[in-house]
Image (cartoon, rainbow over all chains, first blue to last red; front, top):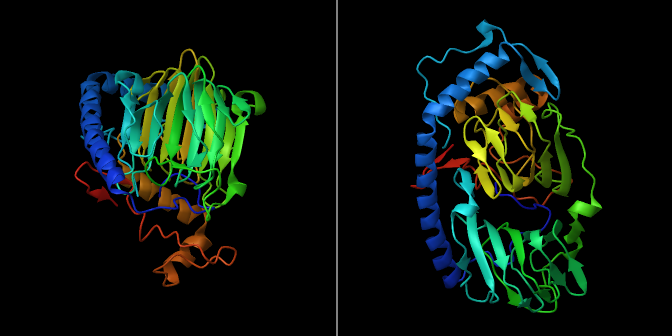
Amino acid sequence: MTVGSQIGTGNLRPEMTNDEKKWVEKELEEQIERYEIIVKQMEDLTKEREEWVADFLKRIQTRGFHWHAENKRVISKDEVRPRDGRPLQVVY
Amino acid sequence: MARPHIEPFVDRDVDFKNMDLSGMPNGIKYKILSMDTDNGACTLTVQYDAGFKQPPGFCYNEMEIFIQEGSLKVGDKLCLKGHYFFVPAGKSLPEITSETGALLLIFYNFGPPSFQESDENHDNCDPSKYANVNSYEGLDWTGNALYPATAPGCLLKMLHYDEKTHGMTFLYCMVPGFWQDNISYHDCAEEAYHIWGTSWMMQFGDLPTGGYFWRPAYINHGCFKSDHGILAIGRTDGDLHNHFHHDPFSTPKENAERAAARLARQRPAMYKWILTQDHNHVPHDFENPDDHVDPTQSDTAQIINPDGSHWP
């Protein structure tokens, strides 16, 4: 799915011109570079993120977990799924 | 059709480029925020130079425009920051000028940018879908009517709502001190751009002014906070349901399976009917008999990798 309306014809010239194809190809190459930079930046945050996650798991077992709007409930220890060595991947 | 997971990206970190695509008017600079790998649909930060002038004309594909800074004169109408336009494919806009220049966000929904000089609509245009509003002055903030909802202090202004897909474009804000202690994911892709302010997510850290993400379905995000508040514009490609949970390590596949299990519990009759009626095609909708949107055929990719592989 792409964003945008399904209530009308979204593109009246779906076949790209040669210029458009070249422009899109170049921009997609740059998008891959941008993606790789993001992956590296997010890897660099790993240590801080592990601390943020530990703080989150502590907070929901003390202050509470927002399950709807302002409604919170405290999560019991046995409701917290064990990590069991699972990685913390954030970019896919 | 899909875009890769771009999150987070801050447009202030890169320079503008001159728009050199043939047919486009002079005086346009742009930064690509994300692009669909199949059809070239894209989201751009755009700068119109002071003195910009574009003759009457249309874009071949549907687009949405939001004025962040500066002003545009569209025909006789002066449009200031906060103005939003939904422009159907082939809808001719009158002459557009900008005396002082303008910083825009432009969404090209089904293809790359294009411009055809014309003072008439394309023959196949449906101009009835054209809409524009100054979202800062013409719309009120509303609470979040979703269930389950985000924490209090996250407010919305609906800019565009697709009656078929429930995809939407909206302004949202977080009040200073906003805090939401849960992890969320959705069945739809989500895109957002920070017009002003910084928010924080447990996975991605700070997202400041100019911060952007395109996030495919089923990817964890949150918990959330904003110390000083934010103003942002967001979009989805379908119905936005908040699947809240508290497992920071769940994967998109696990999240999708959980969402399907919840559907089976909450709509058992429909779930069973879909599974058991030998449907290898999208079921017929008597209200929309000509619909040909088939996610099993053309829009399967939720998460795509740089090498083009994707899941599912």
